[in-house]
Image 1 (spheres, rainbow, N blue to C red):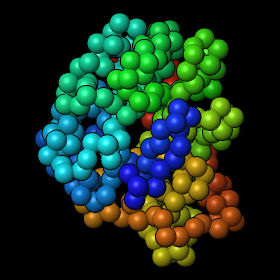
Image 2: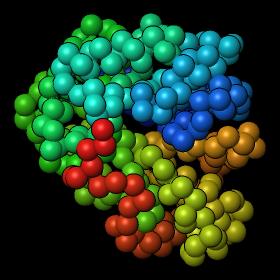
Image 3: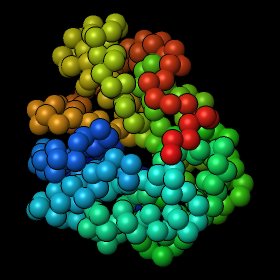
Length: 276
């Protein structure tokens, strides 16, 4: 991944700062979408057991002439599979569907605190990492209290926490916690599923930098230190989302974007979500 911009993880590995997410991409469109993303230059692909498209992701990877060592593949254990033994079994199934012999990053999809299984689940991820079946392990949608419990009760500090994050929900407190513990912040729905693209001040600032609002938001993420995984099934949009390394947002404009933060989510609240 020498020509891909990467970020260092706390375990010695690296990951691309811009990846391709396949959430809500139908299975019958996933193979073509991932193929187009790899052709556009993406080297990080983010899927999950819940998305039911791991097989198609694996087929696109198998079809590609991109070396496996140049790819960074992430998937996630779903809530109904949490627990030590069930997580190990779920990992085996995901790896089989993907057709891979190892993963680059495996995440707990949600903490589901009411079920009180995420510590046992994390210990399963620690086992998988120790066995060399996954290089990096992390979490998704974890809040400070969930992360602190892992730090207190487990051995390995998560390399990544993938959370909802966009100008409307900048997660400043969580990002500060991540910084203290060397946890990479990865943003899902970094564009708020398009809900912010027509809003001021983004439209005016995008014109100022001769970029689209989407490119402006993605650049904002990178300057905060976030990893992003925008989703698109349109090749031109895929390329556009990668074209964010040739400009820099000024500090006062970064501050103006920060002023959009209302703490409003477009997804579930991790404190209460327990999707089966």
